[in-house]
Amino acid sequence: MEFKQMDATTTVDLWPKVKQHFFGALGLSVQQLFSYLFVVTLIGIVYIHVQELLFPLLDHVYQFLKSKELMPWFGTMIVLIVLYQLYWVWTHRASYLLTGIYYVGVLFFVLYVYYRGYYSSCYFWPITEGGEIAWVDLFLLPYLLCVVQQGVYIVTFLPKWRASLRRSRVQGIETDRPIKSEDEDWLGFCGVVGILSDSLKSLDLRRESLTMGIVAQWGKGKTSFVNLLAKKVKEHGDIVVCFNPRASKSVAHIQEDFFDAFSKELSKYCSGFGFLLGRYTKHLGLLGQYEWTRPLESLLTLLLPEKDEQAINDALRIIGRRVYVIIDDLDRLTGEEIIEVLKLVDRNASFNNVVFVMAYDKEYVNNVLSKHLSHSLDHSFIDKYVTWEVTLPEVDSEILKEKMKSYLEDHLFDLSKEEKERVLEGWRYVDNIVIGYLESVRHLKRYLNLMIHRYLQVYNKVDPADFFLLSLLQYRHLGIYTNLAWGMYVELSEKDSQDPYLSLSVDNHRASSAVLPADASVLLEKMFYNLPVGREDKYKGGLPYNKKELNLIRSKDAFSYYFRYMKDKAEEE
Picture (cartoon, rainbow, N blue to C red):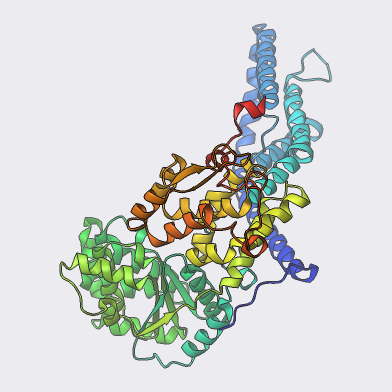
């Protein structure tokens, strides 16, 4: 399989995304509008019947307050309420008004305008006898201030927040969010997914189910691959049921939760499917574990046919769509949980025309099952349950190199052009080494998140290539990194020269080489023994180089900066 790096986004590529987000937001707004309109209409219907009793009551209260000369006290109370509302609006001037509150406010404003201007029998308790201004009019002040506040928020605060959000997304960490669409697929999975979906489509599963395993090591993109496959089969008109056994409350609830998810999705295509599945789960003993389900069991026993599994298969045949059950993160379960899932796919849920797609790290799953079953396995246990195993292709190292380069360009946008070029040049010196040890997207992102924030603090005090190697040592061997920070493995050479430097201690290195992991020894040698990494040709033949000027980690003056987050106090002063 040939992997290709995604090209830079063009205007043509951008328009479908803009259109998709616009119509998605519009659809959500319309949906919210209709839901609020329903509530407002319901309130309006009730209000029409209540107003005939409400206004005479308000008039009676007004006459009572007037006869008892309590209107000044009533006015004082109204003023205090209005002042509090003004204070509340002012203190929340940087807050966004929830959509529900907005619609309620519009409703009250419309009612106020209608009754104040066009409903002569409505009394609003004037402040002075025969005056034009009423006590209730004072409530317009906080309302208008709130409207102004929202306008200021939309014009001022919201753009700043969005700009800050965009900035934080660039400067922040790289999240482990899986790929969900073809536009995001820089791993080259779409080609494999297309071939796989065509092969699945050609299978005849009218009398059986199929269990497929998507196999790859940790962080190699299993979830991304499964997402693309699910999207592809949906385009063919098939049904996708997503089930995450990790979300179950306990092992005992895994099968129950599965059938609940299965029933909810299939009931969209067959209205009686939930009842059929209910009868089936009764015979599995899943329905009878709660007292409140017993009446339902009795009813199902009377109404539904005896051949429960056959009835479900018949319903699936009538639906006429293949069902794909996505079970991700099998390699994050305990041994007992894995066994429970395997019972589902092998026996309890192996209905006709159902394809189970499980994503897992095969070596991890077999090790967990071996420990759970308390004996070593001379075979792959999960192979007994998986009919078709698909091993994900390895990601081309060149793609990972370019992706890391793009990450660096995104996260270091505040640096000068010259400094960016220095960083990217340093990355070119060590990209083969770093990618050779990371080998997966997840490792690459975790490495970047570990390294980038520290580098931004000391970028002008360190050599990028050496810093990348040191961060790799920190990522893979934190204990060795900590020891190095305290001066282990190295000793000061040429103390009296103008360019004193640290080199590998001969005695310590010989002793530690037999103990340290091979990759850690290689990294230490590249940082403290060999010529500057990536520049071997430039300085070969004994050509001198100034370690201090290059800010190499072996430089006595630069060494401490490689382990700092902030500049020292002397420099700040």
